[in-house]
Image (cartoon, rainbow, N blue to C red; front, side, top):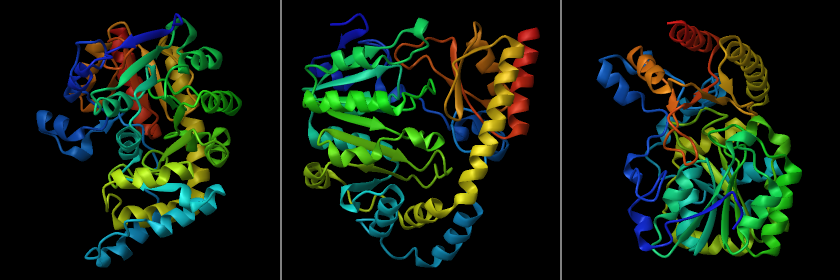
Amino acid sequence: MTENEKQIHPTPSLSRGRVKGESENPGSDIEHGGNIYRLAEELKMQERTIIDFSASINPLGVSKKIKTELRKQLKYLHNYPDPEARRLRKRLAQHHGIDPEMILCGNGSTELIYLASRALKPKSVLIPAPTFSEYERACRTSYELRVTSYELKRENNFNINPDEFIKSVKGCDMAFLCNPDNPTGLLLKKDSVMQIAKAARDLKCILVVDEAFIDFCPEDSIIKEVENNPYLIVLRSMTKFYALSGLRLGYGVFPQHLIGRLKEYKEPWTVNNLAQRAGVVALKDKVYRNETFRIIRYEKQFMENGFKKLGIDYIPSSVNYYLIRLDNAEEVITSLRNKGILVRECSNFIGLDESYIRVAVKSHKDNARLLKELSLWLKA
């Protein structure tokens, strides 16, 4: 076992919960970003007045083209959705240059994380830490599953060392890799991911690469490599870059020999009519895509300049959110909440503590408000 590795919950107690430590924080207590409804109720505010930095969604919001298309489709809501999402899969295949028969669409990519665990029934899984908590929650659906946590080093800014990760893969039959990572925003370059994928194939370990945020740096996607690697799965989300969180839409590209088994376990009609149509239109909208890159690039520079000016430690991010560190983070979070501003408290990520906060890149007005509030608090 390498210095970075830590064996965790190899017994049936796995399914009863662990988020940070073997007996800490049951899974039902995991809090993701985006719960504006609870805060609005607590503060007796309207939901639309909450400024939500806890959910990392494109600040442009839903594109005009998608809104127009959805209005047209409202009169067809009496029809069941296509359970195979044929039109969307065909468009995705054209967009990526892959076989549509390798694609499964889901109610967000999270559905497919759970599906892969449930259908493929791995017995030993490697999960980096810190990373997206749903990998481990999905694994807890199996009583016989052993999870190995590959713990990343703070002094290395939580970067993944491909060689060390490959050593940790040995003895596992499934491994998860979030790229870019959530919550750090760190991107592992394509060559490094390919190195890990090749090693996973040689070790006969299924590598699940979650590219939920890769649309912000598409040149580093390995989605086209699935057809050449029977042990590679790539998951994608359309809720982040295209701001379709409320519709829930994701997809996965799977080796052909796994598709049949996955379909046996997949619930029908999980991708509704509006989500399917929105996905088709989104992939065609180059104007929206280009404007997103422009806005994100400008606002990230604005936020980084603000963090530096305030002396706030942050991890350089390749995407639309930042992991920042504040000594008095818990008090800052409470102060912001009382003003109707949500940020993502990160202590329930394995490997992080209560000093870490994740904040999204939002509109210029909202970003300026956040920096102002942080400035007022730090000067108090």
